[in-house]
Image (cartoon, rainbow, N blue to C red; front, side, top):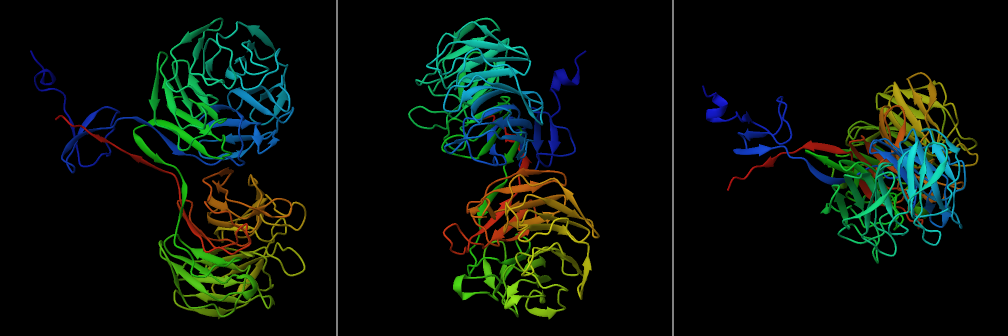
Length: 602
């Protein structure tokens, strides 16, 4: 007897939206009654922005997965580095320093069991080192020193092949202790990519510009189908049967990206910007490409998914009407408030401006011109306090959405970037400079008066803040010693401060906003003398800091900030040329949207 399914076919789910409480499987048909059409969730491959690497560089060794990887060594400008950075699927943090020479290098393995080998530091290198996720340990040397090699496998079963010392065809295998020679590659080239495992490896590309591809079975190399675009192919990742090569160099940097299925190469979505000497890690369905030349800190993630992933990004907003630095700020991305600051020889300013998510409008002025003051609250209930006007001041002013009214004074006058946390009726003023010393002073505001609380663990000025009175955060700043920019971070529970994990890049006079468990610190100045203006931003999840998207405009000297880690705002400050800034930038956090494709039967 025939069944219903044999006579009528399978049921098609009837839904009012592309997603619902029903579990939808990739490829499964459903009818969307709102759009009046048959649809299906179909996985596609696409690149999206990840958090930027802490320092721009190229020719780093990279290995691991998209959510747990590292880059080690490389070159930053003309200098070689021994630094390691780790990626958690969102952003980068600082890892252990290499044990041996600063150098260009290649890598294999995982975040907690990594391997680097060979490279260049004004001469070809034979060093190899092992990483345990925290520290590097010297291992036995390669038999043949070389650079620009293919490198793949795991820490206890790795392969390094070809490369330049002249140009070599030599293959070496690592067993977790020592290197031994294997059979030569068929085409001896440098600047090649490597992927796969010891018994199922892959190499491709090279210099002179080549499309050659070879597979390794643990003993012999076999030439297989060429790539579509001949190139130097430093960024290759994945397996022998599912690999991706991203970017590279022909006679110039290219964006071309190809996927290998174990037989042939197919062009897929390009990376966002042309680059070579980059690093690639992960798989053909969840990969990572970062850094490269032109010098870049850019990170891109490749995902084969039914969702559309949009990476975190900064975008230009409406300019301030009056440019200034050492500005106060509070509010949200669509209801921001900027007040006070300094404009060159004109001195301290009284202007306040309101932001509506698109443009700034002049509001009523502060009663007292000031710079380096603190700000907290909202656009309709803001607070300005402290700062420098005629000397260091203790004055407070409240904003009601229309005008400023003088309130009770701070107990201690201070400026130098005193930080504000919380709201107008439950606020915190912390740190700053009193005119004679960097301060750790903390005061609470209850909407009427200020009372003293416990001090910061480290006296500092010009830091960044986030959170509320009972769950606050103070990050970076200057403690007056060398280096002037301090990476320390402290959390506040409403009573006392406790030290937590440092930011990755110290800074001062930047912007901070968000909550104690979801905060951003960005922009500011770095280096021993505080002169290097930053575009970097870092996100805190309540435990650790990782990098996020970079701003378009480097700025320091008191940048205003407001909002959250999903919708933030920075404005003002000064620029590397010494002029004050009118620029506003809006931050949007990463978003993931489930998408469905319409099925056309025509």
